[in-house]
Image 1 (tube, each protein chain N blue to C red):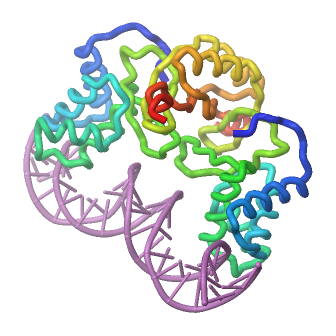
Image 2: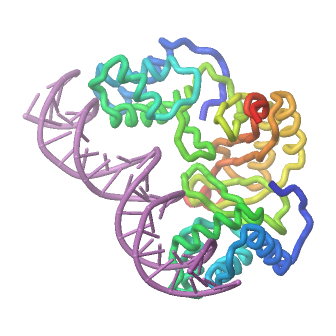
Image 3: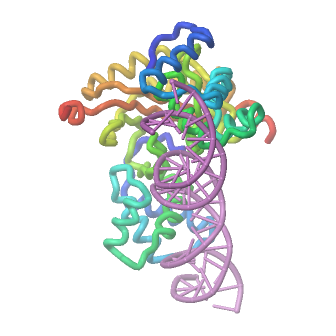
Length: 153
Length: 153
DNA sequence: ATAGCTGCAAAGGTTTTGCATCGCG
DNA sequence: CGCGATGCAAAACCTTTGCAGCTAT
């Protein structure tokens, strides 16, 4: 899990991913590159299906499986994390250039707002220490009804 | 979502559920009663499959579907909440007699510890207000490696 | 040539639902 | 009787994997 919040360029992210592939002795692939480009340009959480649809617009010969497997690799490389909200669908979040944050989610329309609470980090560590756990990651999600959905009732 | 943390008896919980069923004009059912009894006696989060196994020990003629549907009813009645951790399996938590708490989960063995952080409530409301959301519920999960799993490496 | 890359189809793992039957009121 | 309660089987959903053919090195 990454903890540094410094900004890095798209190009640097690509290099990170390439080094990751090299370490594993993977080969180059035009299709995988395209998927990685699409993913790195995303600023919102998306499901693998969403990302598959975006990728297909650029190259309709790419299959879902390849998108799925590439997203897994992006997660292993540290550029991506899987998010699982209450609706049970896995979403992928672009991690770099994205300071740590938590999520505020509308239970009606699934709108998702990101917010920051530095206090959480402190509290988190306190609890991990108290129970002698080795910290891995945490998840804070607030569910409610967004202003738009409140209005339309 | 319940916010009161007072203790209530098993019998009172049953009455709450019965009133809930009456309001919906549901009929009595020996099997559903048995499932409710098993559920109300639980103190840990369990999957529907776990609960089904416990129920079958008391009456092997009860099917999974009935357990599943009864758990849904318990949720609607307010006695139960569904928890979805990162492993994707829905767990059911007995809500009454259970002050509000959050979860510390071992990423290796899935051990789950409950802890309390009153500060979270305050912070939560602050954020809901800031973004003008109507609060529904929240979820704080800390994932790490528990002492036992740390030791065995 | 060897080993990784791909797409398709199918398998897995869970949660839900359709339907015919049973049983409470 | 009428309508909810049940069990079984099957559908729905997503995620993951097997496999045969393709491609980079």
